Image (cartoon, rainbow, N blue to C red; front, side, top):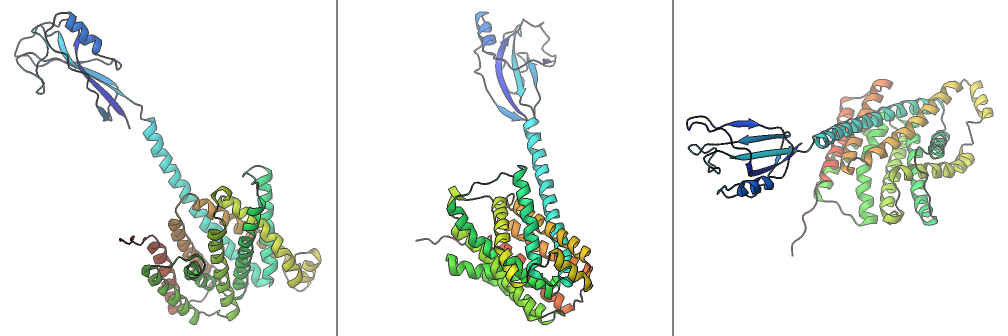
Length: 423
């Protein structure tokens, strides 16, 4: 966008040739730079003109290029309602000179806004794509390799290697942590580990679509835990939005073909763990001077989760990704190469989609991110139903749709802020 400054003043140009009274007002185009016209007015006064000088008038106007117009009017026909200021010789004219600021600034802002929109759209697309592939590969692995703790450990192992490489090659700044920060992050790492472990346990027992339908109840646990530990009580609108979520999950559970209690309670425990992480992050990471950005925090949690889960895996399931264990599994008919390949890609997608999720959260509001997460769950459910050809009854579809609609409604009503109470 351009901005222009106008200066109106009489100018002491050489006397123009006299024109008849009937002639039209002359219009002269003079492409000159912006200059002060006070000297011209002073010269006119020294020349003996009796006309008073008009003080300089500066007006900002957008959209005008660098130009200068000189307009002269005879005494018999003043131009535009402005009284004739010159003598009969017509030596004085009304000068309008405009200068402009280049349009590069405005064009840069428009280009930058479009670029950010395209970048954000690509991030949302990658978020959904990585999530789809993670759930597909993960389900394929868990159907053939019934060790969810080992699978979860493998995902944290790949994520930890990626974090170390990212810090080693300065792709992201390595943080300097204090002892108090580490102690504050440990509880977050514990519930993060449990959340992903319970999710994998559920995916190993029931269909992907059913696991994500149950995980649609995350807002319910968020409201419950926030009220219990943070003293944040929900509004009537938030409570109303939870009703279709609970009802939809109940309806889908009653008609789910792959339903079993182990898968159901594992998904519910995953909800509880994940929302506990959100509440804990609000409760313990309150010091702004010691706060970390989301990507750094996720990277540290990934490393801690690996350290926490390794001994648990060793003493519960045993390490099943060792060469000896894989050879024994191959003798029982397991396609080891396929399991290793899919486990690796599932781990890559697992770490990638969470990194992208935090990158999106840094660019949009939490409400927008919550809506995007709701859409992501719809995309994952639909894609898994088509890929695995999961049998879905009309009532089951209705329950899933009702629960997801409730999640969307919840993300919208969270924006409604209660009116302050007047005294």
